[in-house]
Length: 299
Image (cartoon, rainbow, N blue to C red; front, side, top):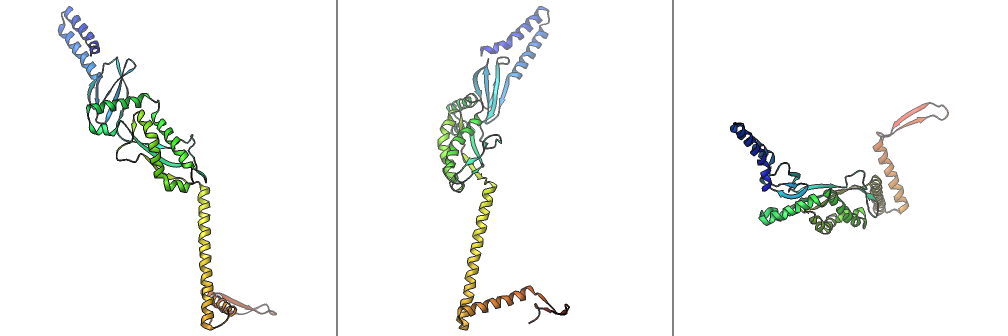
């Protein structure tokens, strides 16, 4: 607190000069203006769920939380500000980095994000003196451990997630992505807590939303589905074909050859009725049209 006396030196000088020139009122007024300026410039109002990191002469001093605080201007400076709210960090978004995950069957990018917050959410909810001390330590670790702590989180997730995805195919990964995310949480969360980052309450820690299939994989799957569909149609058509012939055999008491002939003839007649074709008769020797038959309306 003795550093605050620095503020009073100019005020005392101002009052002394005012008294010496028989203008103590002006000197006192200037002293109050100076002190008001110092208090105004040194005042810090911190909102709920926010923090302010203060350094004194270049070294860490303290962390301010909600309320009104005063720093010594010219000696103390604000290193950084932030909040204790849950944050979402999108992963695998840097176009310059290696964003593809190598699966057993192909390589593909993924849509994933991680939720974190600074400080233990249990301490924040408890709102105790000891809890806020631990939160202040977490804030200090977050600010001073890594130059870019979010990049460190990104690296931790990648180093834990990538090997797990490489163990199987894209289909395997889609089926087990939730269990994979839980495994990553157990692996990286202890190290994250060492630099002040915790898993928020009520939110999923690691969210793997989608695995983007490459265009060639999509085409191969479409071809496979189309082939399966055609095969099923052929099986169904064959079953209907032989079922119809068997029914003709049983009802007309004919052999299989004649039953097939009857079936093909009937199918040809049905085709004529559906397509309604027109037949033109041309004389072989004369080269002229002798007549036209509308087979679609001729019985």
